[in-house]
Image 1 (cartoon, one colour):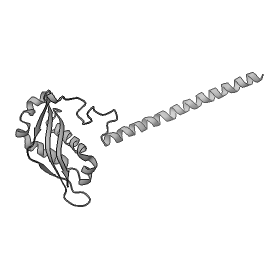
Image 2 (tube, helix red, strand yellow; image 1 turned 120 degrees about the vertical axis):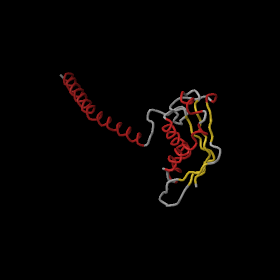
Image 3 (spheres, helix red, strand yellow; image 1 turned 90 degrees about the vertical axis):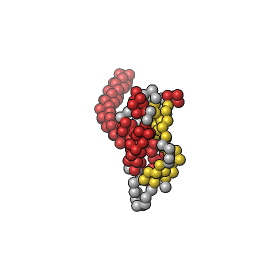
Image 4 (tube, one colour; image 1 turned 60 degrees about the horizontal axis):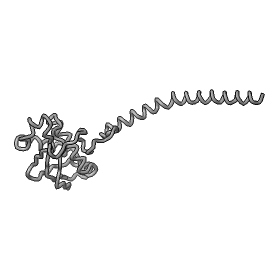
Length: 176
C-alpha cells in the first residue's frame, strides 16, 4: 500500500511540475520577446549591429577590398571643419586631411571614381562639412576618429548612392 501511495505522490508532483512549466512558458516567452524587441529598438537607435560586425569593422558593407582593387583620392590641403557649438558656447574646429578609398571593381567607380576629387571636391567637402558640423566638441571626443570617419563614410555613400567609396580616412586629426 505504501508503494502505491508513493507512486501517487510522485505522479501528483509530476503533474504539478508539468503544469508549472506550462504556466512559465506562457508567461516568460512573451515577456522575453518584448525584451528582445526593446533591445533591437535601442540598438537600432544607437546604430549597433546585433547580428555581428563586418570583418574590418569599418562599416564597409561586409565586403573585403584588396589593396590591388583600391584607388585613393586625396584632397591636397588640410581642411578645417567647424563643429556645432556645445554647452560651453565656444567655437570648436576639427582640422584634418581627407583621403577617400574607393573600390575599383565596383560598377559605380567607372562613373564617379576617376575624376572624384577634381570634379566633385566641393560636393565632397560640403557633405563632410555638414556631417562633421552636426557634432559638438563633446560628441567628437566621444565618437573618436573612427566614429567620425564612419559617419562621413555613410554620408558620402548617401550622396553618391553607391558603396564604391568604402572608407574615409581623416589623417592629422586634431580637435580644438
